[in-house]
Length: 417
Image (cartoon, rainbow, N blue to C red; front, top):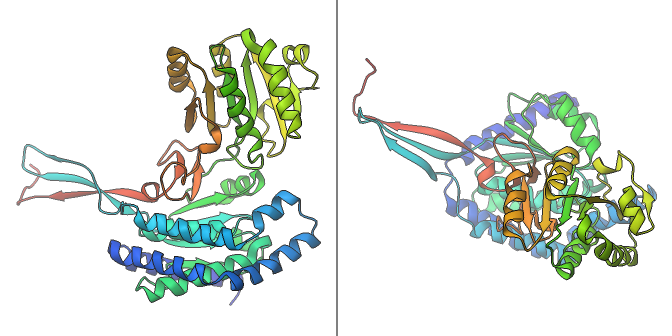
């Protein structure tokens, strides 16, 4: 068979598995997750050997050190994947949860109940741990999944998926509930995006070019975010030491991820004292600074352009703007941000509440780093992605976000007059 026929077969297998998985009990799903976790812990050598093939190919392509870091599997990272599956197994099963119910005057009892979406297609890059996280969340929420990882991690992804399939099958879960696309042919993505007959939703995780392509080509609904242009606003009533800790963490703890700070906003009343100390700390951490005219009057840095304010650097580069007011900070975030994660540092209750109410982002923070936008950190066990959509779900996507709602109506012979 050709690629087109192969992908249709994958879709058919996934749809059949979704139908079989829908009525699965929590016990079956949790047993499967725990068995997979056990097998992952016992497969260090197998997985690291396969991962070495990916790392060798990546080095030949001269991939950046940050990309190599995201790609590498170690014993510690494999155990962390296993732990993530155990955490998901311990979470409540969202399937069957009654979201709301009412009794109508005619006696009809109407309830809204969570149900699996069906078949979830996930297209992602670089990180092999996504294979385990995504498959675990889909299994627990009663969904079949089709995974298409990046070519740079093909050996690692296939090996993890195989362990997942073996463990799930041994525990009595449908063997085809996870379908891994084993080819590195880029045309496979295009074929996957045409399978609207079999796939219910596409969730991309990767760079802007990948997500843009998927949004342009997909016949299937897509849940995604394009950019992570995240802000921290240091208000005039901020505690300077707290603000410094938060800003350094948000920018430098892991600059290559979507919830890292890309723009720092500082109120003019404290800019003269705060900017020199934070600039030194950022530079000591290897960060390049780009600033507005008011910023450059206070510290030496590169001139920030209009393009900088809307740029997700994913690197040790930071844009800085001095603002006149809380209102100007909020306006800047809503104008240039990507509606992902934004924070205010302040001791003012009224300023914090105004920021929370008026910043139009999926996650908004008071006195905390934007780096916490993550399913695990939110107590969701893991995440399948972060959504900046406003329909269906917004923010870190985990178990509940992988369900849909069904109306269940019980009557006693009622007819409509």
